[in-house]
Image (cartoon, rainbow, N blue to C red; front, top):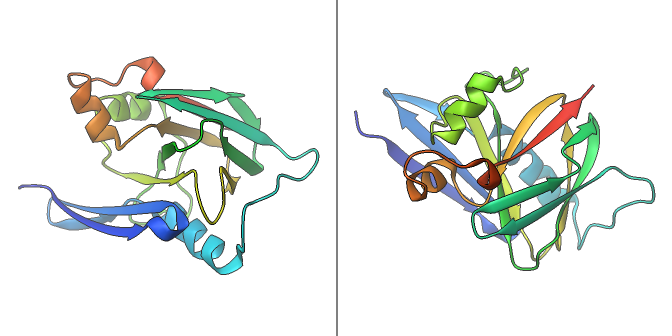
Length: 175
């Protein structure tokens, strides 16, 4: 069966939300991002200020290359900061149609994403710009999250089917 895409653009808030129909079933891939986008839209009135002592994750996007510093943080509030003006980042996390408590990405799951397979994942992200500037705050649960410069299927296609290590940053979140 052909894969159909339905895209809901929340570009005003810097988010892109995509649901994919696979095997005749709607697979919500962005429950996390949609919830964050709704909360963000309701609560944010301007650029986000990072409080003193807050946990920061710096993301550098250059072409398809993504670098995350630090690569390991603790669970809880994390301020994701795009260090290069005018860039955006796509964030991939485990997710299912019943994503009440998604399990962390395994090595096999990350390998699937490296090959452009996003089945049972949630995809969201944000771009540098208004209303939040280059910072957004996420409440992150323990697990691993993949950061890419574009949709995983698109990046994998550009690289001949496999996303190279430098094109997919992995953030590990510890309890």
